[in-house]
Length: 104
Image (cartoon, rainbow, N blue to C red; front, side, top):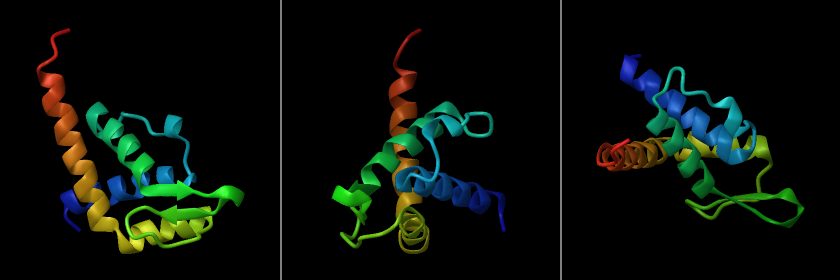
């Protein structure tokens, strides 16, 4: 597997884990990933899942559900993997380009 695909797989995995509640945002450290990518993962993960009363999770991308937390994670990884990568990439580029114009 090429380095780019491994990187993209990790981004999708982190995003799906955050969205489904299997990972706390504080666990995502910018040691390996740059800050704007970490921020993009956090923002996109908030857009992927709806939580209904009783804790049932529903996918905002395809309106399927209800899922358990693990079921939601598996659904996102299996069905929406490339969409998640595209969303995080676009958000990361947007964050990076807007931060270049801000002077410290």
